Length: 409
Image (cartoon, rainbow, N blue to C red):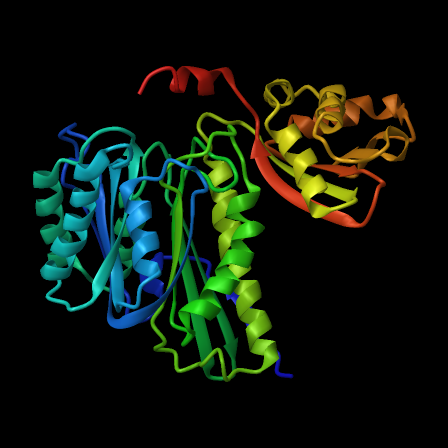
């Protein structure tokens, strides 16, 4: 079995790091603020694409989500995606669906292509898209398509809403002269919780792989990345992750040895986990990024129940914001999670420093706990002592500034 090397590029330009993908990000004033914020983008491939997607589990789905799901279930050749920020096109009725379809048709015509586009939107819920602005933006974006680094960065920036920075990563898998590239960009800062978050993520690769094979790999990577983060426990209406493969590398997934298949799965997981971590790190007005490692559970579902109960507790999150190692709140949240375990078997640590075990807390480490939770990033390990299952979740604190920020849009 050959050994493939996975390398993360020190500098990522985003999706155009992958050969034969073109991007553009432009300003068309969707928000009506007459500023220069980029708010519409196109990702395009001359070659037809293999596509995979995962979407929000919210029963209320935005028009673009419904259209993406419809198109992915069909057999039409897809060549890209058009995306806007500043307006979610959610809860907009039949007109919203018509507008989303119009975005697809206009994008196809603007690139003089025969293939179909997908469509994504993010922003405020309940407002109709300003289609005059959208139409001019699509034409502008189509005319600006390029495969250079600037175009990749413009696309990464045009999808942002309350984000303070773009989120991108490029990974290469190589052996000898053979090379496959995976690049990803994402947006997300608030209304973040599993299944999924108020987030969009787009991933490109030059691997030759079928849509069904790519879907299986993306779904698995998603469960341990975008579906393992939470900031405020709110699930959005527009969450979408799309992966696009154009096949130009010449490496065929179906014909590849197991060593490459494993390396590609690991690289895709790395891309998704990195973007997910960046989303939490850019959470609205947060000051702490906390990794919860729950082990010793009877089932993975139990481990996730405990992790979410802790991560969604306002009392726990508020104590983190105050750099207070209030482990009692954390243990209480685990206790009401619904997971099966016994208190006497539980073992709690902050960054490997003992906190609570065998029904006793280790007061002699109090100062170390305080130092740990004063850091911008730390890890909490909770072993339930009930089994062999585990789960990891990335979350944040809850600050007064978050409340002020979200008091009004």
